[in-house]
Image (cartoon, one colour):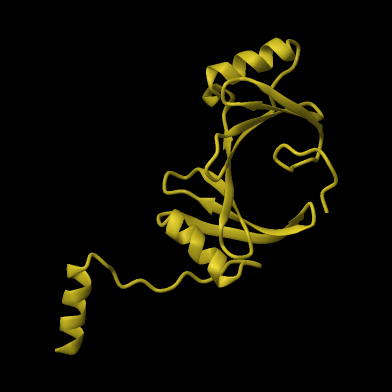
Length: 159
């Protein structure tokens, strides 16, 4: 009877009996939980600790319900810093595509990512050959980075 009453109360409050998300890889529980709250229908595939500019972060790789992938970057406290997803060249905003072609008329985009910092507008990273160019969503050029850099807009050493 108590179990039935508990389930009725849980259903009435809009809740559902969920088991906590088991951490994946190097993730602490609070990081996995924060990602699950933000993306409840996604599957956490991997998690790794990283050092960027002397600051520890965690990157959680997700498979979304539609099969696409996304990386979520979080602080050790479980606060989402930003999200990164791979795009097709055709999915670039027209302003970004036009700005890339104008700046690099002979280049071919090999890889495109959108990085969306929490609470801010996204930036677009277009890799061509050994370099990556970054643009705002309005097509404003931010910078060009050498191959292998992945610091979302800040040129410098990556620990």
